[in-house]
Length: 92
Image: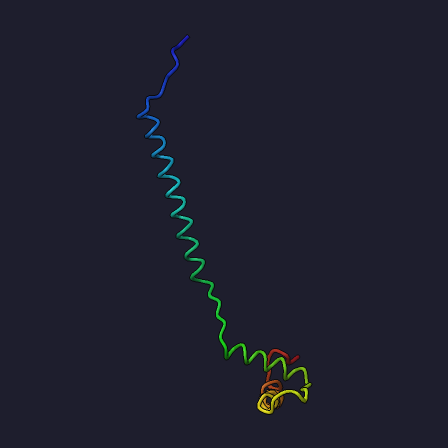
């Protein structure tokens, strides 16, 4: 029977170093790819855009309550007259 090959502690350390280098390389690769994906997707939330969308929704409902402030009713009225009729997406 052939003698069993035993590995020396130095060989075990070499294997550990190779595994560690491979793990770090894979981690770095995934980190690079995820940073590229983050750069292509940007989400913005701005006050004026949110106000525009809210006013548009209020104007399409065609109802104002008497408790609404006069400037708010004027803004909704403007949207009903000037913005909603020119909406390109709602035209058939």
